[in-house]
Amino acid sequence: MNYLNQELQHALAAEYVLGTLRGQARIRFQKLQLRYPEIKQVTHQWENHINSLGEQLKPVSPDPIVWEKVVARLDGVSPKTAASNVVKLQKKANWWRSTTLFAAAASILLAVLMLNPQAPIVFSPDRLTVVQNAENKPLWLIEVFTQTIDIKATELVEAKTLNDYQLWMVPSNGNAPISLGLLPQTGHASLAKVSQFDSLDIAALAVSIEPLGGSPTGAPSEVLFVSELVML
Image (cartoon, rainbow, N blue to C red):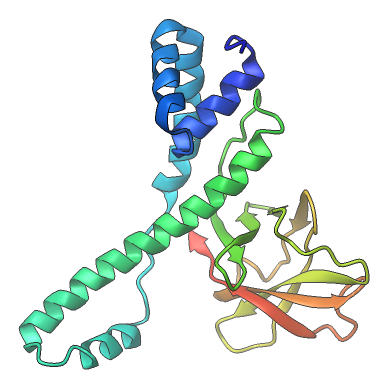
């Protein structure tokens, strides 16, 4: 195996940073970093790119009603102890939520970046979300930039020849969902941000299944997935 091959170096470094390189392969790669300065440099490059995404994620506090229900189910626990448990549960839930989103995003980013390992993407979105299916598997990574919404589809997106997937923003004020455009079924796409995107408080993004070309009525026909945006 030619460890001086740049494509191989980037592939191994990405797996090492994400933790998917294990056992003897991981030990061997650690030794290679000591032997070849260029491999160590590539590894640091991947650490900076992957870790930067995790550092930008902020914990999202669940709705207070969730914790009220948790407290109600803590039978036989004193109020003081119950409150302490709720605080611990909130911290754990926030950590797991951010970690799950980061892991899902990182897996998608790895697949995309591996296609062009010598030019890693510079991350600078304002907001992001990962649209997941019922099994919590990532379908689309959605990154919101100043003027565009960049979308990357995973291989788990079910291809539809007679339908399109359409992305919607759901305003918090209860107004009707606003179309953001059609989602790619493979690869990636960049959508222009609608004028209301930055002026309205957005409760969530939704994905609907539509006839080819999008909704004929201007409203979602059948909503399949809903995902909250994370501020960076």
